Image (cartoon, rainbow, N blue to C red):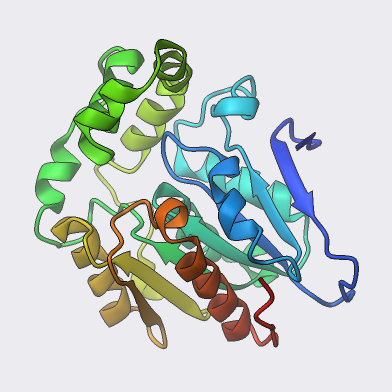
Length: 265
């Protein structure tokens, strides 16, 4: 992983037979995660030019300041990674929220050919369970916020099994986590996903929370021309538990961008 001019830690994997017109495929991780969580997915995409990166405030990009307290800062970082090239963006969880916001930018969005979002948190949508989600506060000690978030999203037993060193690593990501959770819980929604005008693929897990599944259903029903991919047996962490299915979602999104792709594995 190399340091990008922006200061972000970026992993740029270029296939040996890449053609000059091929888009870059940028995978954007979610909250309390990191770019390396896509490793098993990327290994299934050796023919594509893939980019993963640690978002501002996380892991190897933890020293990139200021911490992003607005969605726009994360979107600016994404465009710095894209670097003006034609791109397909794939976002997991909060990464999907960033992908949607970037594609709705009026000027630079022309570089984004298509996007996929797997269960992006959009707490302002009229979806059952979102009202409670939107009301959550993230103003406590970031270390406390981190543990609470991990226990809620991954499971208390999973947190308890972490080593002390691993728990501390996650707590160090707490300021970034708390800031980005606050950034999408403002009085005014940051964007209207129904205005999306590029090819879009939305993914959800069969075993995900009703709020997560309902948000994806809203997107499919309100984004013209979008399509749904359901991951049988999967919950929210599909990029980790179902890398084959997630890689297929990436390939389908590249196809929607108008690019022919193979099935290399």
